[in-house]
Length: 223
Image 1 (cartoon, rainbow, N blue to C red):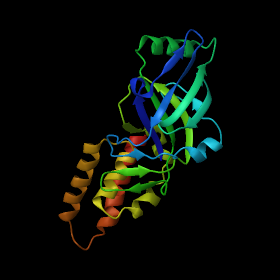
Image 2 (tube, rainbow, N blue to C red):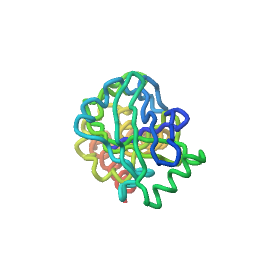
Image 3 (spheres, rainbow, N blue to C red):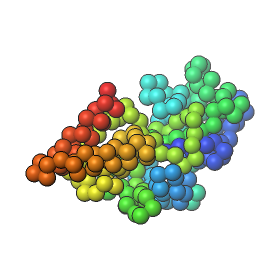
């Protein structure tokens, strides 16, 4: 799944260096619990950072990089990054001006999280590893500890393969949330599906019909 984790710049300690377009800060902090109950453990980025430095985009728009990260490393606090905006690039200049003015106040990491990279707990997921840290973006709307899924990535998720692994209502709810639905939307769909199938002929295959219903909803999301 393609996962985004967002922090406000007040939390990541952004530092701009005069008019040079260089800045640094923390793109992720270890040990906190976000609104999904997820916690990122120290060492989660160690392997992916060996493969190279993430790209820098604005608002996760993967059309034109606005600069480059010159350093990305873990320390005891979190994922520390240093970067510079591309000189002469209009969007990069706008981003730099907005950050200095405080109107652009978020950083968000984007990358791939695979099954086996985390442990399910009663409180939420404990994320031990990010399989691939693809980019770190300055973003307009930060939400402290928020997790969001890029809906453009929904088509790349193999739901038909993942759904059979869902053994409980909570598993299905988690899959729907990872696909981009909000908590209450996911809960509403699971609740409605249960009500529908509880009232049908017991001889019918409820599992198959639940799968079809959820796939139909996900296809509408990705259209």
